[in-house]
Image 1 (cartoon, rainbow, N blue to C red):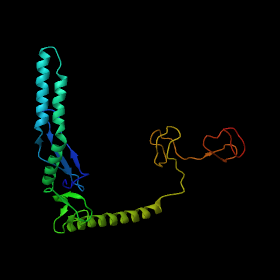
Image 2: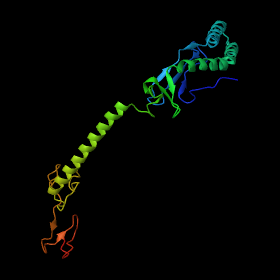
Image 3: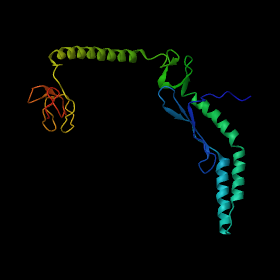
Length: 219
């Protein structure tokens, strides 16, 4: 029976089967801070040898004007036959190394690095946060909440001087500049939110109207 495989969802396979860089390496990550740790690289000698054989065969046949593709493929095939079992063994060794860098939380079952581990409680910092850090964070939240409340009160007091009945236009009808409620357009100086009155009856005429709604006089 094979040994149980851990780290099933927080590792990255960096293994390479063929070529001069053939070998086994795995990258494990912390479930809390996502920092990574890589296992020591182990060369896959069969994969490297197959690459060297293939290059040598192709070079020799190339001098004769032929191709050594068949022999090169055969070498790769022989190397590939043992790759799976060699990778599994390398993975087991990598897990053994990784267990010295990670801790499995008994509460949430996450694997975390030593920096994210509450050694005194034997549990991860997600489940048992550092008390001093939480106290400082709570103080800052309290400060921010109190300042926000004071600023809100100051805004309510300032609201007493804000004329809510004054007509305002947020976009100038002449140049389309945003006015932010100012009496005059900052882009062209046009007077904003002024009421147009009819010269005949003094009735208020809506912006853009062609005729007075009070007497029908053409604008």
